[in-house]
Image 1 (spheres, rainbow, N blue to C red):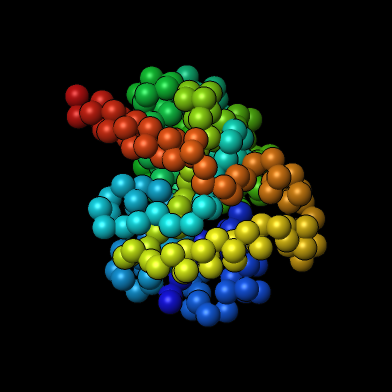
Image 2: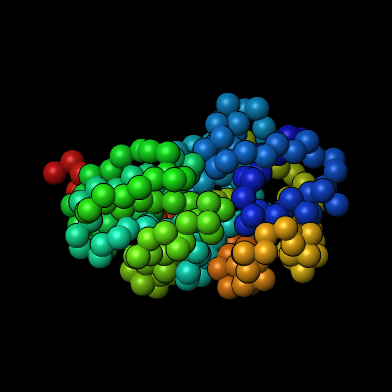
Length: 247
């Protein structure tokens, strides 16, 4: 079976499991939006994709007991600005994950009650003018944290708003899988997560990133009941934000 996996640091435990215990899978790695494309086109059977893809695809099935989420601060999905949020009138959007874009819009429109303009942009080395903010996701956040005076962590903002964790990406299959395959994937991912200390050791070429803290304090890999509740609430919050846009 073909499987697509996001190529961010937070997916390294899944990659470790697949490399050491899941060699029967043909693995593709890409940014979240590209994983979605591979999945939607049918080029892969299973993919770790932004949770918004699950909302859009009525045929897709959430599989495994694992996901990419956070219980509070996530650190790698943030809004940067040089002004307080109340003074932001325009936000540049990182287009690598539509889930993060939708989460930002939910927070800005439903929680903060701000009226801002959004624009897709190459955000890696963007320079902000007065009244502007930028959404950044993924590993690039680590290298930009000190460039801006205001940092709003979207995982924390969601938790402040709802009291729930947030799920950014879920494992989906194009068709129902046999219980044996799902059990196999659960074992593979569990093995990878249990070997995070080894992963950190192998990632020692990132001396400026505290991976031990990131994996233990920021990323939450279990897809539990609260995570599933958060997914359904997020679906409703997106609809609420869309209605505000229309009126």
